[in-house]
Image 1 (cartoon, chains in turn green, cyan):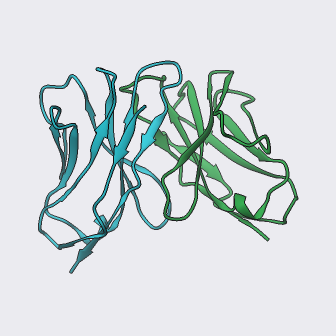
Image 2: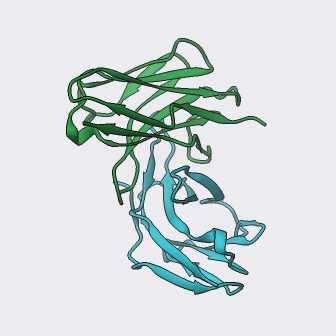
Length: 114
Length: 115
């Protein structure tokens, strides 16, 4: 089945220690998104790639970076995680950008910062 | 600016009954898409149903239907024949056209299905 895969499902890191979260997709979608979701809140878009074109949200901290080496993979790098970065990180994909384009989400990675 | 409003407190429904989850939206774009997602405690965001602003018919997907009232700017989700597995958080979301057409989410509604 075509799907969005995230690894790992749970990640524990230390305060200030860089961490990388992984997302892969078999849907061959052009667009890949990274969201941060804190407890009992709605997901918040961090950035997205349209093919190789990176689009950062204005309020995304510099501590968060992303890489998309090919169509299938996208990585979220947190350079120096703080306690406030503990959250669920959701990857999503869509065929294109547009009002009618559905985003399909992966299972998420829960990040714990000690 | 786009805005999604979900104001219901936690909702409870008896198994096998129908339930309506409310969603109102605000946008100045004539073209937009409305989406409902389900998020169980495992965390995965599961796409349920989509309604386009120009669609004449209300969207339906199995037990899910969307009561789309454009003049009132509401897009309520109706779940028929509730099952225990429907217990989850439900998010209403909207997307507008444009290069940066981000998905704007509401705050979500918690639904609990009682046996």
